[in-house]
Amino acid sequence: MVQEDWRHDLAFSLIGFGLGAATWSLGGGAWLALLAAAGSAALARHTLGPSRDRLSTTESQQLADRLSNERERHEATQQFVQRMLDVVPMPIYVKDAAGRIIIVNRAQAEQWGLAREEVIGNTSFSMAPDPERARLTHEEDARVLAGESIYKEEHTLDGNHGAEQFRVIAKARCEDPEGQPVIVCARFDTTQWRQAERTVQQALAREQLLRQRNQDFVQRVLDVIPDPFYIKDRNGRLLMVNEAFARQRGRSRESVIGLLSTEVELTPQLAADTRREDETVLEGISISKEQHYLDPLTGEDRFRLISKRPLSDMDGQPAIVVAHINITRWRIAERELERLAHEDALTGLPNRRHFLTEADRLASSATRHGHPLSLIIFDLDHFKQINDRHGHLVGDVVLRQVAMRLREQLRSEDLPCRWGGEEFVILLPMTDVEMAATVAERLRKAMAGAPLHVRDGDADAHVDVTISGGITARKLGETLEECLARADRALYAAKDAGRNCMLQG
Image (cartoon, rainbow, N blue to C red; front, side, top):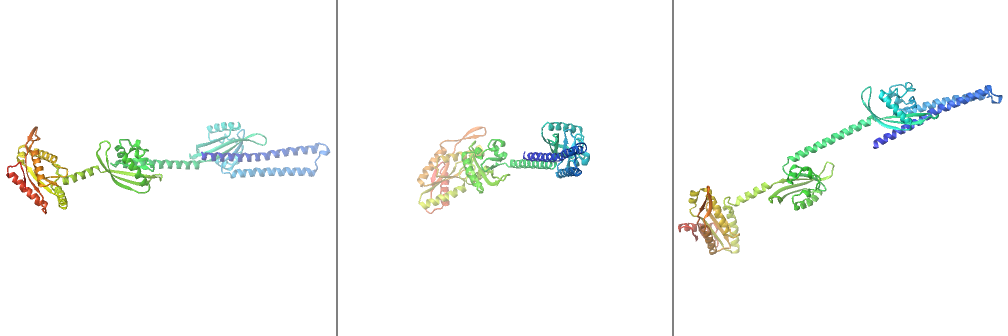
């Protein structure tokens, strides 16, 4: 890690600094020792040797002065080295092969809680807080003296306050001017950074947990929505879907995440529409529309409202949020209401109101183009007796079967209608009265030609049905109401004539 590398480099830079300082400090003392030895030998030769080897008083004084100066320089050098080490805020100390401390900076002495003078000459093993640490120090020193460099991080608890501490420890070997091995130790306190790192990691973990909880909450909210709802990225891949979306496609929620929305679309045409619309939404344009399609499994009509909006996801990337609202039952209900508004609920024929609306339109067209327009009105003979004998439920079945036979005898452009009760009206565009009479007679024969088969309680029953009616052709300038009135009079004339007949009015 980058963080570990800079600590490692710093630690060994400090060791290099300590090694240089130790060599400088130890080197001055060794040189002074050599000077002292040389001075002693010269004095001996002056006292005991031949006269040519004797030093004059002036020369002896000069040598003594030089020795004194070197001693002062040595002391100044030692003090300068010590001041340099004391400036370093990290603990540094040097010890000999036996573990005796020979140099220590202020930071290390303060960490041990002792004066520098109390530390010098003691072994690092005796400074260890416990036997186990002393044993470990002894083992590490042996490894360093064997040529190994040590770099490690320790996590300990402060013995006085119980506070945790983190520190990087680096140890390396060097030799003093006399060739004797020494160990330079540097300690770098990383507690502040480690604790800060832990705080950041804990904060990150909390944020990740909070984000996951928020996402779970959003998922639960979406799952409450009864209709499909989903979010996809700019490429169309699903990021989040609710249970309704997965259920509609017969898959689990987890199995569709990451798929293209077009891969799980209900029909190829819907998939093509989706691709085209997604491009529009990513341009910043919202889409709201109604869509009609056939269920691929049942073939039934389906209606839905679709809302597509652009948004940015949690990472600021473009995304599309889509909501489907199933309006099939409302559209079917509307169809049913529309049907009931112009259709007779019992027979399925147009009701009176729809008939009058369409008849006015056809009459206006006939007048404008000069085309003939005829009308037939009929009812069932003795229908009350059918109700009295078999009941109203059977009577309703009879009316439905009469309506079916009526449709079978008419053209698609003809307009039949249940006028009310057992009475029916037929408007025949492009038809004169003679042609209308032919249709009426064909219809009368269809009704009387075969009995109607009905279920009367637990038994089958056969009901004979005849009809009586009136036939008219609309006269020039005559209103539809007037034409109906003439046909109605012809109907009553047919009944007076013995029923089961169709008369012109």
